[in-house]
Image (cartoon, rainbow, N blue to C red):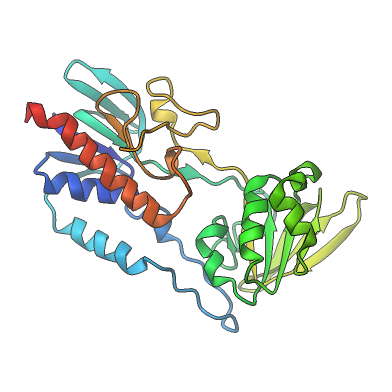
Length: 301
C-alpha cells in the first residue's frame, strides 16, 4: 500500500512526485514514459530562426531532480481507478492492481488528428498541435492555423500579433462572429479561409504547404513556415470518469488547491479544467496537487 499514487509522467506528474517524495511520502508513479509532451519539440528548416522554449531548462532540471529521489516507478498505463477499503485501487493496462491511500491524476490530453496524408511524416517537423506554446516564437513567420472552433481562432489571434502572415484554415463561419473573430477579419496580416478542408500536407524534410479543398470543391495550395492543428483536445480522464466530477468536455473539475470532489483524489495539468495548457502552469498544478494530497494524508501518517 502506497501513501500516494501519481498517474501520469508529464510535467504535472513529475512535479507532483518530486514534492510528495520530499514530504517523505511513499510514492508510486504510474507512467509508461517520463516527460509527456515536453519530449516533443518543434523542428524547423535551417533557414528558419531556431525555437528555444522558455522554461526548457526548468523541465530538464526537474527531470534530473526526479532521478535523485527515492520513489517507485511502474511503467504502464492506468486504465481505471476504483475505491478500495484502505483508499484507492489503480488498475493498469497489464492488469496490475496498485493500492494507494491517495491518488493524483496527471494524465494530460490527447490531441485530435486530421488523418490526412503527410500528417505523421511532418509531425514536429513544421507541424505541431500546440500553437500557444510556440506563439511567442512566430515573429515574422508565415503561419497556418488549422481548426474549426474557438481554439483555432484564439491561436490565430495570438500569433497574428507578431507573425508576418497568418492563414486560418477550416474555421466555421459562426465562430468568426466572436470578438476575436471580428478582430481577425479586420487584421491586415490574417487570411481567413472559412469551411476549407485540408486534404494533404506536402514538403521535403519539413512541412512546406497544405493542399485544401474550397467550399466550391476546388483545390489550392497554401505555403507556410509553420503549421498548427488546433482542434478540441480529448482529456485523458477515462480512468476516473464516473468516480470524480468532470466538465462537459471531459476535463476533471478541481478547486484552487487541485482537489477533486472525492477526498483523497487530486488532479493536475491539462487533464483538469485549469486555465491554459502551458508547461509551467502544469508544473504549478502538480505542486498544488501534491501539497493537497499531503495535507489529506497527514493525520494518518
